[in-house]
Image 1 (spheres, helix red, strand yellow):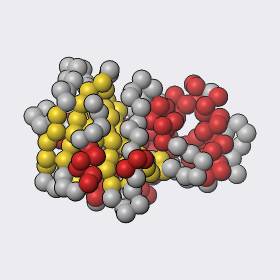
Image 2 (spheres, helix red, strand yellow):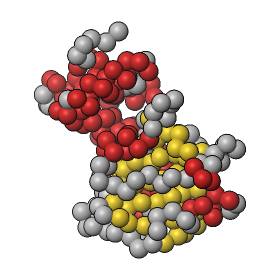
Image 3 (cartoon, rainbow, N blue to C red):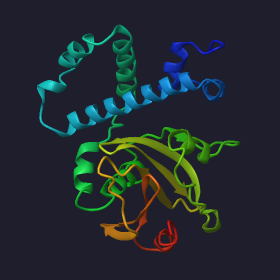
Image 4 (cartoon, rainbow, N blue to C red):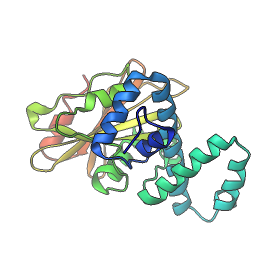
Length: 249
């Protein structure tokens, strides 16, 4: 049971996805009515993503003394007790979550030569491989647009693909060098999946012209709107590819 109002421990449990659906709903109602608490929780969620990034990179790269758990703990002790405790709780959550990492820097560097490479990699890790767990799943009575608006209030509306049988089912917050990003996964009745990706253009304001490219078995259609870059990613062949071409004009 959570307290009323939710305690800091309850809010950490919310960030760690350790609450029941009813408890999560109670916390979300509280956060909607208390912007300062919502901003603090959002910062914790960002910290969790940074830790996931560090964990996953450590699994893919040679041993790095800077990523040694003891060295990390020593650096954390230099911060305030509140920040140290927060990081410790999030680190536990990451260890439970497994390989929920995100190679933000590598994907961003690749994206500097080929547009929206990070969107393609996100689709493979989230949709095809299932490496990244969802941050949010659509349930009965809930909808995805509100979740997106919470983090990208001035972005374009989510594409309505219901006419083609695709509905948003889950989403994931991501961290890139350009800033916070997100991917929304759509699925139809046959289990086919396509994704909508959004991120800022970065400090250099690298907006994209309307374009499309293929990478292996995937196609990415990309464009820019006020303040953000967008991409739709899905199978390069079949009905989904034709659907991608219609989004973002």
